[in-house]
Image (cartoon, helix red, strand yellow):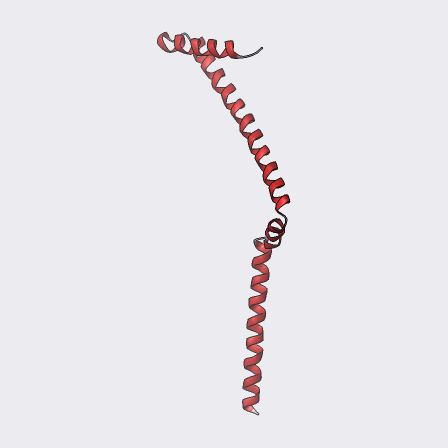
Length: 105
């Protein structure tokens, strides 16, 4: 009877170990969103569409960010030029003048 009980206990431990491994794999799949990745890989058209939208968003962000940084830089240069520093102000005034000539307004 002892032998049967030992075999039964070992079988339960094996089943519990397997169950624990399945639960760990389930948690990992949920954590890394493998279902969404498999969905994208199975529909390449959707993957291309999402990458296209992401590229448009990045390009728009770069354009807006560059505009803001350039405007701030030019405002700082104009402020420095208005301080009438001997060498720097003439150089900066010339740069600001050239930039203002290129603007369409």
